[in-house]
Image (cartoon, rainbow, N blue to C red):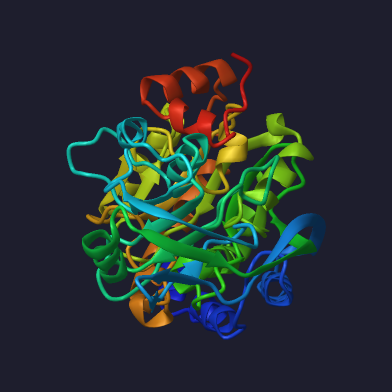
Length: 436
């Protein structure tokens, strides 16, 4: 029976939900808009036939941006505050650190200075360096402020949170500037005093996760996940409205194939991912890891036509993708390395089998993501439908009694992090969860 494929390829359920999400407006963690988007998603999951669709609320550090600025040589240069930057200002000499590699911080005198770094890495470097790692290096080396310069042209200042799980508000003011503003700062003001001012309201808030279920009431379960929050400067269509739309579309398809599911499938749409994986960390801390057979985390899907799966060293996860790819004669790429960013990670770090599902890309970093340009027009309905077909087949495979993916030990995950040179960045950002 392949009628489910034709049904999916003509379905508007996921795309309609995506349009609803981007039309909410601001979906910042802890905001009224995030709550509205979660309620829309809960309703959508119930409407397609899932059971026990519900919201689970938790506390989160609230942060609302005001007006921020960079002043240099008497001119005001456009910038945006990085979420969870402290409400503060500083005047100090600018130090342009280029890519902001760890060695760049070690070689520079940053004490009391403003550190500026690019958002990408050079082709020759061995790993991607996350924004929060660069920020943490700046703090550790005594910087008084942090300027994050986009490498993507187009007058697009980048956003992205700072701070840690233990200390949600960062230590020094941080702003994002466009590639063009960064070039002007580097050319005219490297070594000169500039002012970096962040205006923000720091307050208590709540966020929420959305849960719903399909299939038999088994002890084991397959999690199908995404996050519903987005940065407040754009529609958040790619990051991560598309992922949440995919979860709804998969629930729509799987509800029609529920009799084929041999393991319970739980749909979880997390809140507050963009400020430190808060919703998924809350879920990880309050649920039984042994009951989770696999996680299919959708964060970055639909941006391009071909799906890419970070499999985190779980051979069984790679086997499942290969089986679906062969059955449907459709390209699907697997990456066996670890990817410690997004909502699978609070589980995978303890050895729970999990994918990070995204689209292939030749770009370094997020491209249009985390900028004003993260808008619906960048996505295509065709890609959502095609990828939903493949992911539906994958979830059915994972929910089969014939598919067993062995959990890994936390020690094995920690060893892989060391081998893949990811441990250094996790330690400096406070994200290393293991006892050394």
